[in-house]
Length: 385
Image: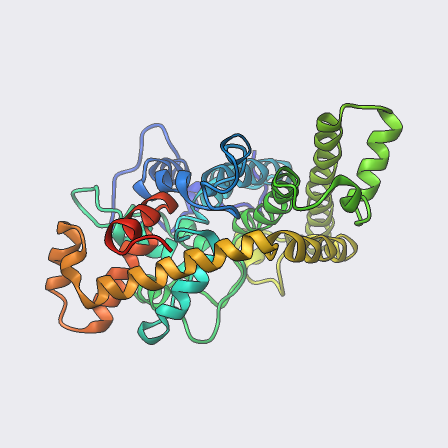
């Protein structure tokens, strides 16, 4: 039974292209299934979270998160939080599963590189690119381009990090022009849950991956808030525990602290504000799903540590430089000579009358690449970096 402030399937604003209702699935279950069966979702398997796929030796590298495993973890957290709060778990899961569809190869490094390359042509933003994928680039259905997701799912993808104002990335502007997503308001509580679940998941698993990559030690993590007390509790309860088990026991407690904090804050805010509908939450002054202020400050300290010791570790910086060069080589190559594109993409490029249109098509192609495909194409067309 969902709460009065949850998004209700019978109140959905529907789809841009009318379709008959499913006999067995709610609108958001149907959206979820379409995302899972999309080409873009499958490609997340070979897209970077932090480490490029082949980083490190084969044994360690096989354990690092990819965009796909990260997305699955986010969806799990979102279902847990949404279910506890009486929200619609199907919608929260749908937004969580879609939230990283627009990421290019090589993680945030790839996004940074493409943002620079696309600056003259309308910019690049992975959230906006996710919308472009689900409304235009997935082309499997006879009656429409994209996945024809519901308004609530599109709203969640667009606004899960909060209201949007100012100049819009062209991909977002196109979708919003076709169907007003009310970008000035908050997202639904379910989409807010997906956003917080993203923070919970990556803060948790990046600690695991950084330890496995030997970029820092458990002793160094023990100096940090939340993490230090977690290790101390494990040592008190399980003295002399095997190091691998000790690590997992401590970090799962960190995970639990974050989830429980979000739930407690949301329950208190919901009890105090008494929203009577999903739209009441959209019109509130700020998000209703968030960390408490004390935990938020502790998470900032953890993020700062990860930034210095993991995201900007010397070995990671070297790899960032290498893969940035790959994208700096591939993008202008395809833009200046569209005959280098695969036949389907080449045929589309030849019909476009201006450079902006061609740049956006090249972006769609390059941003859709997996890490391994981008590396292979660079090797084939240009050579090693």
